[in-house]
Every structure is written in C-alpha cells, then in structure tokens.
Image 1: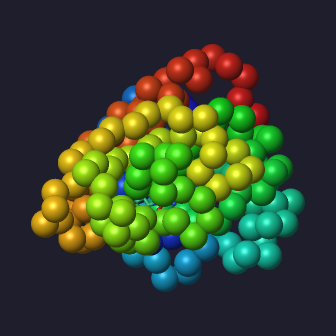
Image 2: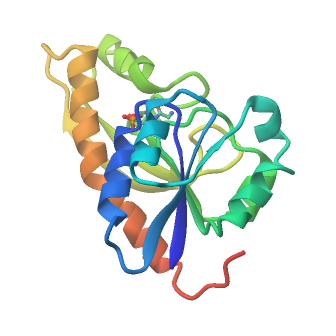
Length: 195
Ligand code: GAR
C-alpha cells in the first residue's frame, strides 16, 4: 500500500476529491491530512472519513525535526499540497524528491510566486484581461511555484467572467485532474525503495 499525505489549509474541496477517489483503491491510500489551521474545514472532512490529522504551527513546521518523523510514523510515501500556502522546508524537499506535488490555480510560470494564491490569482488574471487561464501541477522545490511542471490544463476566460466565475472554472479543472495525475505519479513510484 502506498500512502499519501495531503497538506491543505482551506476548504479542502480538492482534498475531498482525492479522498473519494482513493477510498476503495487497492494499492493507494490517503493516510494523513495535515494543516496549519486547527479549524480548517478540511480537518472535519478528514474526521468524517476517519483519516488521521496532523496540525502544526509555523515554528513546528519550520523545525521539521518534528514534522518529518510524524510523516514517517504514518509511513507517508507521497505528499500532495492542495491549497497549502507555506514554503516547504528543505529537509522535507530532500526527503520527498519527486514525491511531493503542488496544485496551483494558474498556468505557471504566470501568476505564481509568494502571495499568489486562491482568489488573488483569479483577480490578477481578471485584471490583466487574460483570455485563458488554467491549472498547473508541479513538483515542489525550495522556491514558490517553481518546481518542474508535470501537468497543465487550460480554460477560456470570457470578458464577462468575474474572479468568482474564474475560480469556479478552475475548481472544475482541478477536481477533474488532480486525483488522476496523483494516481499516475504514485503508481509510477513502483517498487522504488521508499523511506
Ligand atoms: C485551489 O484552487 C488550489 O489551486 C489553490 O488553493 C485552492 C484550494 O482550494 N492553491 C494555491 O493557490 C497555492 N498557491 P480547495 O481548498 O477547495 O481545495
């Protein structure tokens, strides 16, 4: 069984899609949901599904002497950042090379970097009068939104679309793609020795 941890800080609609997708899976399981927000709705969803949760503050997260062993205790092989906004410490990046991905709500390298998340991205896309936007799934490295791109999918932005309309289109793309891309990547881990 390969075990995934989801890091999420918000509503967790993508986390829910992942949980539903892997619920009956024979070889892949969502084994942990981690968050920096003790009251994030995503944690209620985890409890609903009897998935263990891990909550940390900035100090504990940056001092990964404590977060890494917790991931290891849960036997985590792969990490999905789905609406998680903090920079990932080097020790976690080193420990999960090509085994940690981030979901970003724009076509990177456009509209990425520190401070570019959630509605801020859609507002910037609207303000720039883009005619298309989309989603990116990429490996995580030590810079915000700069790891190697794995997957992108675009959608049109119409002149009448508000940032909320754009957000809704992006969520449809994310929900339709993230579980499938995650499954492919975790399956491809194959028999590599995982720590
Ligand atoms: C998603 O749209 C995701 O792409 C975005 O946060 C949202 C979380 O939604 N992530 C970022 O902006 C990261 N820079 P959700 O809580 O409903 O899954």
